[in-house]
Length: 287
Image 1 (cartoon, rainbow, N blue to C red):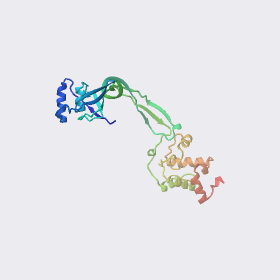
Image 2: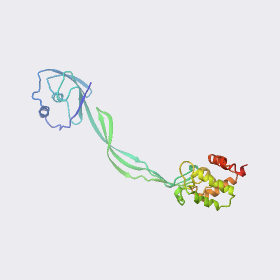
Image 3: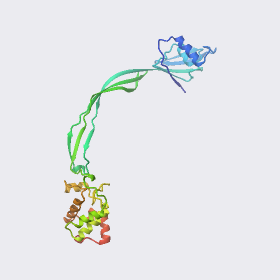
Image 4: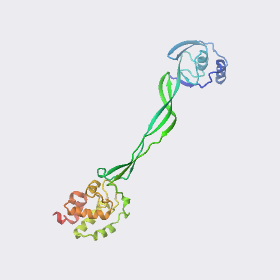
């Protein structure tokens, strides 16, 4: 069954005959009867009543039969509002509202100062404890035929603002912009390597590895691995808790010392070391 929906917002003090007359003028109805008796069934307030009527329009008929069509009432019908068909079914539904005030907690935000490269090597300290705020909301609840259907917040007042929680991180929190911005510069870092106390083989391996790992870029920060020799941050900060992973000079020294201490490039930098072996052969201290 197809229904049309009509809502009225009329002053309840207006006389019924005035409403009927206005409807006749709006709908262009000259006479209240076409001479035919029609059957109209109306469902209202949990009651279903069948009427016989000579009315022309659905709206006029409902008013003539004494049904309320105020602002809180809507009707649904298989007849249009300006014409009444025989065997018309009309459903009148009543909407009511209720105003309530409720107290609502306002969550606080957590602000983290610093960025961790390895969470398990990072210390967290609460600099400012967070506190929830509070507000009171005015809510208008809507009921249809006495049953709750929805609600909307029509007003709210903040009683207490929330206090943000501030957490500071320390350890494993260096950033690329914490060092001079040199960018991918092989000539610069090769010159640094030339000045360290190392054999020619060690220098050659360091130059080759940094070129293939990071493109000679100490600030390299894409992906999991960081810096000139692309160290895994958690391993770096476990071994060197206070050293800046983005310091090219520091990575050169620590990388060389790590290899001298027995670390195998075959496992720490497998893809690049394979290229090195193909071009230069195994490192002498690994043979």
